[in-house]
Image (cartoon, rainbow, N blue to C red; front, side, top):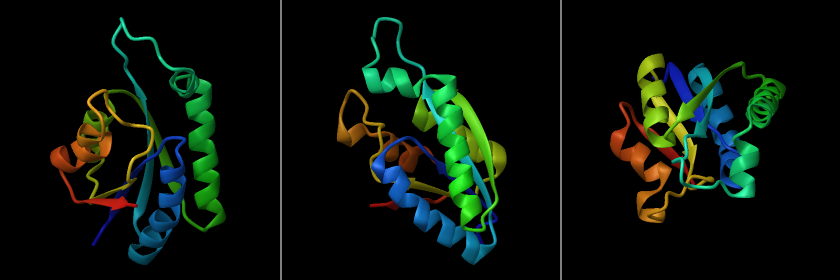
Length: 138
């Protein structure tokens, strides 16, 4: 049913909590799991917050993905990793389309609130733009 599952991750509590649901779904459906981390392209006139600056470093992203891959391996789930730069919601949907994802699973908020706030969160944008079903883990 869900041959390929895309799990966009960041360093949020919501993302970590969604990982258990992802592992269960992937095991249940014997799915291919692809972990994605997106480094957000900020406008040139916007200074990143300290947490945004730290999570924008290639080293931090590589460590986040390696830790997530290890976490899933410990649960008997093999995962592939993809690292991209861009606008998170659009990049998530583009990658889902590229890999032929049958399902995107994401935490309910994560670090991705836009300047417009909750109504225009990354999660909300992904729901509206996704080429496949989206499962949001509260």
